[in-house]
Length: 286
Image 1 (tube, rainbow, N blue to C red):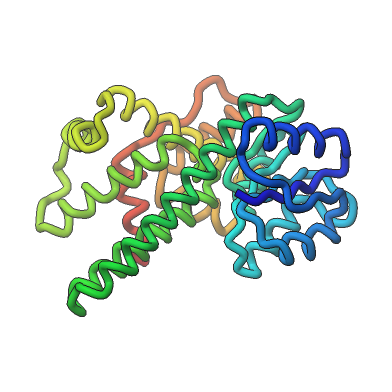
Image 2 (cartoon, helix red, strand yellow):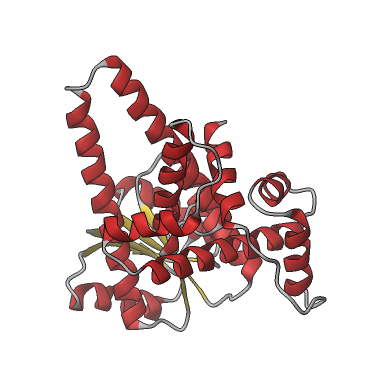
């Protein structure tokens, strides 16, 4: 893969470059320390991956990524920062990053994250190729169904990104759960399905333990609630907060999570997996 590193600390740029080189992760094609110059550099080189510092002179990393995303660039973004502020991390994911790496840098974390980004990009390329190939052989009706499924998946991915969970391991399992629920509801089944049956189906499909899948899904949805609660703390009338707090969660539980995050409550808000999954389907269908 081709990398661009945007970081105002030269020593950090060298560390990242050395890691990429030592572990044969790809090639660094450009680097810079200015947020304004970086926009033109990334647009010119169109790298596979851009590692960007949050705090940059000229414009910060979040603003930079938003502008690049709006231009339609296919680059994957990894943000690097010393900040542990949850609101700031949430904004970073909302801007379109794939992963967030904390400073001081950890070699194993960088190698692991870049590996995940490469796997994700390869998967998207394979899925795109399959879609293009099968489109030649399916009839108009099948193509319409396939297009609708793709649109739903894309909308759910956008929701995951806005919730700050697109990079979580459980996001993929939630996708699988959503597809199973969608097929049941579309097939005329009522909503009295059992989650443990769906977990069993996912388990058989991917060859992983049922308990592991359930815990992964719960952790990811809990992280989404925490991020939504943080949105509400920052701006109670935020459009995304108003939509997601009601569509994906019980609002009183979101208020409980807000109180916990602010240190005003003892207990976290409780998640409802069925409500979250069915809420995703509802939002994706709109």
